[in-house]
Amino acid sequence: MKASIILAHPDKNSLNHAIASTAVDVLEQKGFEIFFHDLYEEKFDPLLPADEIEKDASLPAEIVAHCREIIEVDLIVMIHPNWWGQPPAILKGWVDRVIRPGVAYEFIEGDSGEGVPRGLLKAGSAVIFNTSNTSSEREQSVFGDPLEVIWKNCIFDLCGVPDVHRRMFNIVVTSGEEQRRNWLLEAGQMVGDVALRLLKGQ
Figure 1 (tube, rainbow, N blue to C red):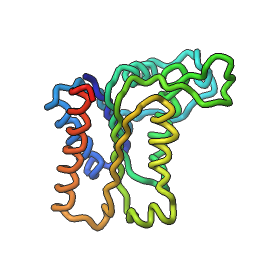
Figure 2: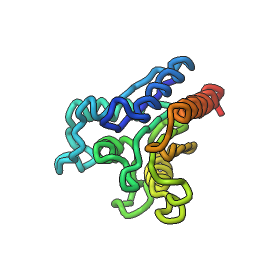
Figure 3: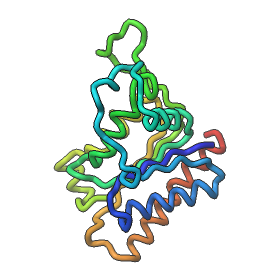
């Protein structure tokens, strides 16, 4: 089986990077072939040019490679901080350029784009890890947890990924070493459980 791990955090000493390393280790132990992308390290260009918008557009080799990978994988793992209720701009740009028509979704015949698309992704599951300095209660009551809506409803559901799991680790700014270790253990357990279900065909 194959997994795509997408990391979007500029600080290599961040909890996000530690979560990504944990996910890689766990999935390698489960025998997954892994496509790992640290978008900041790779200096991924998030700007979607006009000539890439059309479904049949000619794409740069880098984007073609990302598209091929996301089509092939059985599991997608996204790791990023909560910045203003959104992913970092570099990850939003990755979505704009890679989660594209003809790759992740398509509109049915006769639909010019105004309807609900049909998902094309092969992945059976997605796991999203977020970090935040806002409490879960405030995130829900004041902001409505926009990242849950973005990833589950607006992206993965529409792209055909049926099983979506998300975990927000908070509050990071006041967390100690022991708390972070526990979070990493939880992240590893979560990824491992999802991977095991996929391996068993559940």
